[in-house]
Image (cartoon, rainbow, N blue to C red; front, side, top):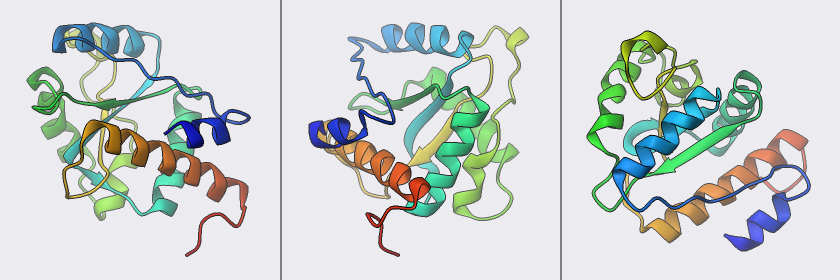
Amino acid sequence: YNEYTKRLSSTIQLSTTYHKSNDDLLKGLQVDSKKGFGIICLDEKGAMYTSTEFSSAMYHWMEEYGSRLVFVIGAAEGLPAEIKQYQYQYNNQYSGGGEGKKGKGNGSGNGSGSGGIFNRSPIFMSLSKMTFTHPWARTILVEQIYRASEIHKGSGYHKD
């Protein structure tokens, strides 16, 4: 994790926030959503991407959300039900066109007037069909963010 964070430091600023409870997580996400940040929730039922697809999607999201993205790794039990309720709506809204295509939408399904947590529905993505511990999921995610930035730059880091 630290190695990729260091490599990214000149192009992408990363920070990690740990929440002690689901309530703290939900409050934090509500604040981030009101600020207009893009919320990307990692979930086994989320859209799956190749590294190249993820690079395209990530830079699309960065443009759409003003370069402010929040990636959410749930607790040991997964994401709270208050977040997962948006997944059904999101998957239905963006279910056309293959696994990697779903997450490119803007997730604007629930609207700000509904009293929900989010101003716009979060994006759901999966790192794999397998389950990882939190430290591994975080490391894999940060490596993929680094890889996405290198793909975007056109460096030789990623091999197709």
